[in-house]
Length: 486
Image (tube, rainbow, N blue to C red; front, side):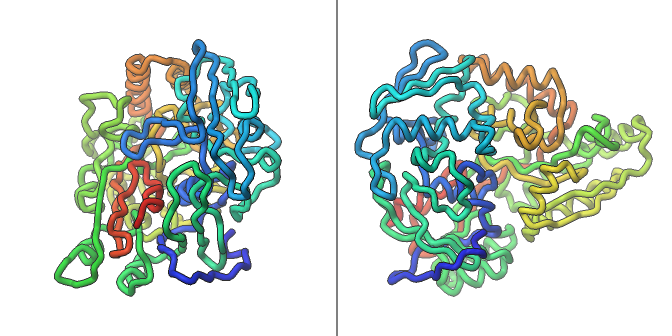
């Protein structure tokens, strides 16, 4: 997408440069689901609510205030000082048109499933909106983090180059071969950024390291294997670079296609899970910048069940389960991105599974090709990352039986009525303690039937130039801290 644009990159002062390993699939917030795309669109756009940088709780952003009248009716008063990048004032019609567009089958947003419980959305004057629900929905405020678009553009054709009018702290200033430059925009929705930012695609981590050492880049977040990190933080090297790390809320996992072939047998999927030493992955391959995943939800999450230990590697049990399923030798393909660190992780997994009699053929693919095959169901195993496991209801999109592509992202084709019932219960239950109990049952069921094979929860590790020395990754991995850099 970026390579196809023709603008030239020009700037009087060099923008802050953020290196990424893959380009955003699209800069249209209606369709962005990859990590880079999500993070970039949240620099260009804003929602009624934002996510607190520390707690990740929903906080008013474009909304000035809100009130519930019972569990099925939400009233939102909009801020009157907010302007789109074009200068147009935000009004209720923009909100109504955007929420209608996100759930419109004609628009085909990949986030439509988030709004399935939403009924009528109506304006109550120029700066007030009423949202009616068809059923209680516990995550409504978090869901309203979806970016608000201009009313006349909300249901328009896809805009992959980021040309939609936005309310975020940046607008697209220039695009070219492998980069997009964002300039500060004063929408009054939040603080004004002091510097332009360039997101530059550099696929090879050695090339990213050289660009940092040459003083041509400023931020690389989650872009280096642990073996390279000490070279940046060594004060004696005189590079001026720094390494910071903080726990994230992502999940790196292996996804099986569960409705065909040997992997439709839960015993085979469990064997794959039991052959993996997660503690060793976290300690060695990630250099202790990750935590082994005992559950889908990360440590410290309010809905994560207590007392669940990481499943230990058990090759004897894995072989026994394969024998019980009448599988003596299992050969599978696993899709993985072309990122070097991901390919290394895939090879390590292949070596581990081989000891249980499971032989993997690793298939590296560019992001677009990989997503296309996942959407079409053309895979057996895939290694993926869920970058923002903030609200547990997001799991609904990825494992509910009603949300197989193109309706959602249940790419593993999971069909389990008991699982669906738990996901529906978690979606409709308003009491947080009751929701936590529901998700504890869900975690136990997913672990027992291995619909998803969790690996690790990765930390956010950033390498910074002196210009970006005060940058700190948000817990969700987004780039919001770029706005505050002096």
